[in-house]
Figure 1 (spheres, rainbow, N blue to C red):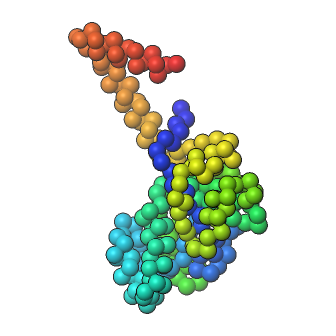
Figure 2: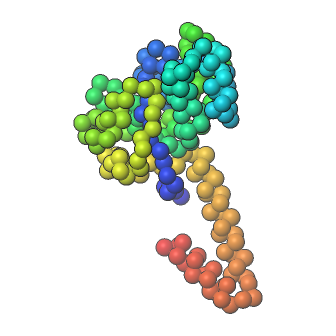
Figure 3: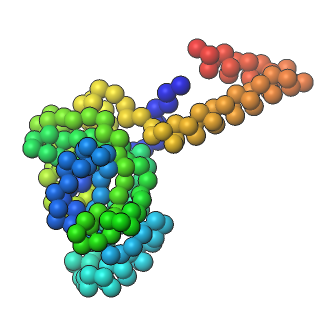
Length: 211
């Protein structure tokens, strides 16, 4: 069974030079994206206030520079969610993918690599920038490491460009399959009910699902 994602997906653009190092080929070939800012540790379930403190202590940021860095780091670690859409650009083309959960890889938490804050990506398409809606082209031109598109997938026109809906990741697909199995069990129990109205409703629902 193949389930389609019906919940809201957010769209993000990301640049491909975390910590000032070009990573486009690694992003595409190894199926991940990341941001820089090494030295602030694992950000799993870390609050915005704690991220702010770490940026102040590690980089000495203040004022606008602190606010800008905080916004980008927090967007990647907290605002972006599993199943959201990420866009990266290369020479007139845009790669479209869905991201996994935030993960911290300590071996890359150093000045040389600077790519310890990561998310796996399932790349689903590659399209010309000129084929995208002007609003998405504007998003991609944003100079920040990461920023969020304010509107929906449909308003972005990505569903029309790719010619398909972006599917759920494997983890959520398995969870939904399990829930569907549980739901069928409930309906089977309802078919055994002493109440004829409940039996009829259960039978009707099972017939609908069978179609």
